[in-house]
Length: 124
Image (cartoon, rainbow, N blue to C red; front, side, top):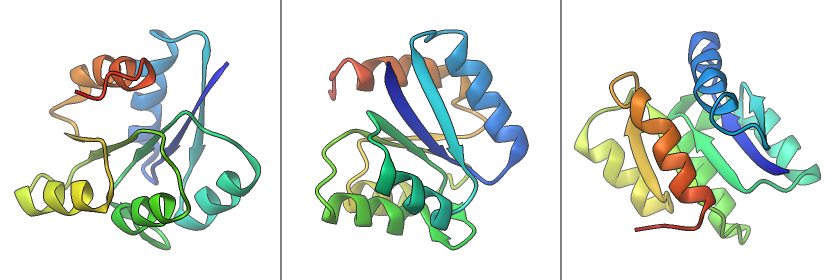
């Protein structure tokens, strides 16, 4: 079973991600962390095939966590799904090692499609 870790502090956003992914991907387990500290703890004990990160989180930024994952050698896709819609937010995430960047809630309908591409290894 493929594993996704979604790091998101907003309960409504977690529910939307869960709804979007669990119906489309029955063989994927989506786990959630509400803070950077919880995400760090989970990544110490589990392997994930994909990370979905928000930009602003308790305990730090998704960009800092993305950078940390890459520095620790993570080669799996990292997708940002964030309300930070400014070009500089997207650029900062991509510079930190993100694979793709979606803006919530506008890109909600694209989320399953992008997740499918990333899980299939289609990084273009």
